[in-house]
Image (cartoon, rainbow, N blue to C red; front, side, top):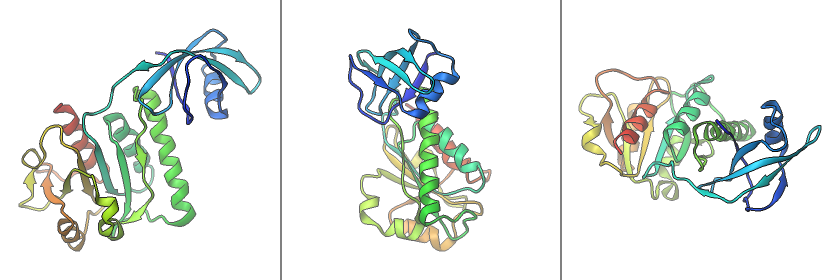
Length: 242
């Protein structure tokens, strides 16, 4: 399998460029040599075949070839809005959601959240999770990197009309009796946003606020799934239907 690297800069065929430090280090760890092939992508939806032109002590230069049209995205935009699970579970969720084709992830602080972030700590975590998504794209073959949105309190996010635009079908993942089966609530190929809670779930008041904002309660079956499992189960189900 070719080494795939994401570069946060527009790529142009026929150019020679020095890789940024992180990408250069990756090439060195893989022990690539001048003349070896690799694939580059910049998030625009294409791949650029390239080859190593020169290796220095810390610098790696590559020659960029002509772009290849590649489409590995889901045919709909999937947004996961979720109460952040604690410890390393959020890292794993971001990685797996990226592999499954998520377009956006909205981390939320909820009433029962164990992980509570704000200020500089929230910004550092957002940047870290964005890097996790990039690494997952390099591994799984995606050419578009999902967006990790800034951490927000649930109530403020639900009340923000701009944030609620263009979300598609709005689904509230709820274990309560009476929630509609997912298959009845989401059409195939439909853009959607799923809202799910942290450990302990959303409070009754939060579920009521979500429903008032247009989210329809849906169930994922008779078992109670963990905070980091439920949104991935929905995303996998939606992606496998297309």
